[in-house]
Length: 469
Image (tube, rainbow, N blue to C red; front, side, top):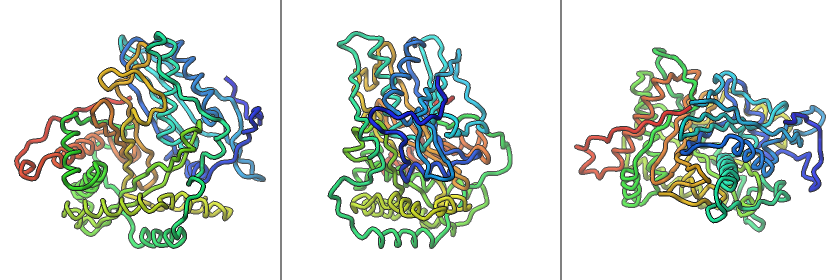
């Protein structure tokens, strides 16, 4: 494995490669206590072939050059990616994968690639944990990369008729990975919209999640997971349709209720405080679909006073109207565009990220249907992807946390179930608190899944816990 940071130039002339605005933001906002990296865990049934999995990882990395690159941050020129050819290897364990302590999870992109992989195997089961630096890929790109690894493994361990299809990528499209709009897009008063949103966000400061100082044994797990069965998931979709909203807007309502109720239970909050939920969404276009890497996200910030969250109907109406306005405006890439403007002023982006500013009380992301995110096509078994002699049983992951924003929640659908992964700030939140918060969120969703006439009397279903690495 090479760890050289030499400026090897590919035949296609891609490297050295400039950073996009979003990649630069993730680089600057990276810090040892709050690293800009995220974890994804996959659980596979079947007896894994270690050698084939190792070679499959390397084959997939050949398609994703940013995952083998290093960062050049020389003071006399703008930061850029160097073709380091630093191919990550799988750290194998018998039993559960053993991750480093949360204090040792910072990835220095100047010295190593933005990917780490651990795996543990037992008879008939394999668990793999991937750590991605957010500067090299977003959540969609990370899942697509994992899909590549599984597709190569599947091709090597099954007959041709059952082999997954690997969709080709175009390396020459890589320089366009930060493109926010397709050519010909007509902007709609970008600067005035940016000023309006900046004023709106600055008009109130979001509350911080509170935790009691009892039993503050931090968890080394990257996240805790809960699962809703297919019946409850279908009921949530039905309730969303009846209310004229999307399921994700119901999830957002539950998130507001969780944050409000949690702070009130800790005894350190008032009904006058401001709760803000940040919702990332992808800006990928048709061009990004052909690229081996893309890192294009924007954020929508939803804000409510704690006392207003008590009125669930009005809160849901606010969530729906704001989400519709942002996503249908044609300029939903506003935040990413604004980062690009700030970046043009030397030192301003670093000054912005170094201030102890809390942008949201919590972050909630929804990857949607996992099978649709996977770039490659797999044979299916009861809604599960088949990769040769292995079956993908679960794909779990959570968003990053930032200083002051102590909760990142990620949701995703797979094989008919809804998975919820909570990344709670380990510097403030114990495993006990993380479990309590996860159970509260599930309870809130179960209540929302029931019609009003039933919700008053129904007892919630037992919560299915999923142990993570």
